[in-house]
Image (cartoon, protein in one colour):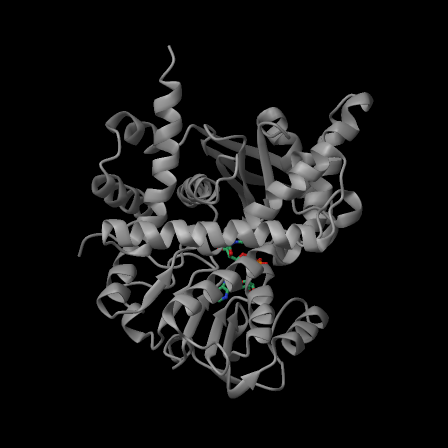
Length: 421
Ligand code: NAD
């Protein structure tokens, strides 16, 4: 049996498919088919017991023709150069789809954060920031939260970065990271932005399909930033969550699970759903086979594959996670008539509000939530419409269409500017 494609190989296959269909300029294809910079840093950190441990961190910068590299930092044992390359490339497409003046970057540390104390995680974060040095910067490459990183980690990165600046430069550099705590220069609405975007895209889809979300059912994989906010913001649509999964296991209740109640439990129980009383534990494959209207994967890559795609029993997959569906899984969903709202559109609300946070920092402004939400809504609807109309124009699936929207914008810029020298 041929080896399974890696995550980055999947991105390349998706990219080639879209490039072939739209007839992407061959020079632009060569450029976008590679990442621009790949930084690997190995750095020592002192543990609580005085031992020294070595860590490996990455930052991949895919493309910055539209603006500074932009993208999250992930702390996870599966982080490696292949995964980070894929995630950085998706960021370029996402910003281009939403017409945001950012490029694509991503990074992370290969580690299991559950094995370290909070003090150790702080020292790991600060030492990683120091090791990255001037490879990040507010007008050059701007990290943000991703899996197992949050606003606290962003505050430590900010603080470390500012300590490396001359005093007179410090307050001009708050926008070196986004997803910060509000008091440290964060934006209202950034926390929920990705989930909010997912829900607004689902609502657009439902409107176009004449599908009533009231009384519909959904289930969610992952109950961290993206999964929990999506689950909670779906509630006002009148839809009902009937299963949910995180690293601790899979859980179901056909009568409905209140996402706000799960959130209250998770907050008190080290971020995990395990032990939540209103649900029944089920196995992972039964979870994927849940009969519902909508599945929202919001955890890790490569969950919907040749093996698992045949199990899904839904009308729509709305991708909150990056890369939850591999190429074979996507083809099977297509054959089975299951609609897919692709990651690069569906979860792009996070980068949109990161852009708004960056703008507020640059201008020393602080916007109210209505202003942030109003601007995000416009971006999500415009992105959705561009992808929908492109899918129709090229008679193709929405993932390929989303890539074509992104690639067309990038191609225009390269054609305007030419290639130096
Ligand atoms: P997070 O760390 O806040 O939450 C991750 C959740 O997934 C946790 O509930 C964890 O228990 C669960 N999980 C991890 N591995 C799992 C597995 N194998 N099976 C089931 N559940 C599992 O991370 P997040 O920020 O919510 O990111 C989730 C996904 O969304 C990632 O793909 C990330 O790249 C993507 N994303 C995040 C943002 C953002 O703003 N945070 C923006 C766009 C895309």
